[in-house]
Length: 264
Image (tube, rainbow, N blue to C red; front, top):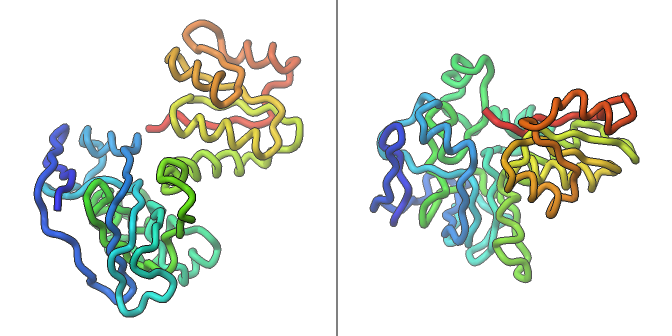
């Protein structure tokens, strides 16, 4: 199959690599129909994340068709369309039972390396260095998906890929930021960063009851999308003092909640 492979800082190549196979009874093989580039992939591309090795397959936002399942898989069958969350989670450990899937205790065989680097262990992640397990990613024609009975979400046939692909990572990231704000009806929420995560955070804030959302950035095209697509008021930090502007817009109170969606 063809896959997008990392070979060093700012060196990625589409190459022919072996097809994945079933390794564990709970695995599934997914034929990728849509995949995306995450902003965090730029950290790998620019060499900011240790633990990458030459030939590693990138990508953690993908969906596709189930082609094969291991003998232990009960929930999925060949032919199912699924969107696959980027953290690999077993669904049974202490943290998974608390719905803290990003720190699953069973999916990252290199958890000790992540703990040494970041101060805490992390779950396995598709295509995101050997600190998170060294799993082959979704910028490929096929992917092996571990713990397939738990993670993948079955997609109804009437929904096209474009409507559900972002459930793999970017939409839940923005939504969880808004959810963490404990937004009350009528609240004003300020979002720093009007990139893709910021756009989803703004729309999620409205969904959760915010009356006003203020997007902050300096890229004209992103500010325009925040206004025209996400329905936010906007501030350009190159043009105004943000603290003063927020106070003026909120009668001196300031926002009820703030979201940092700028990234690393």
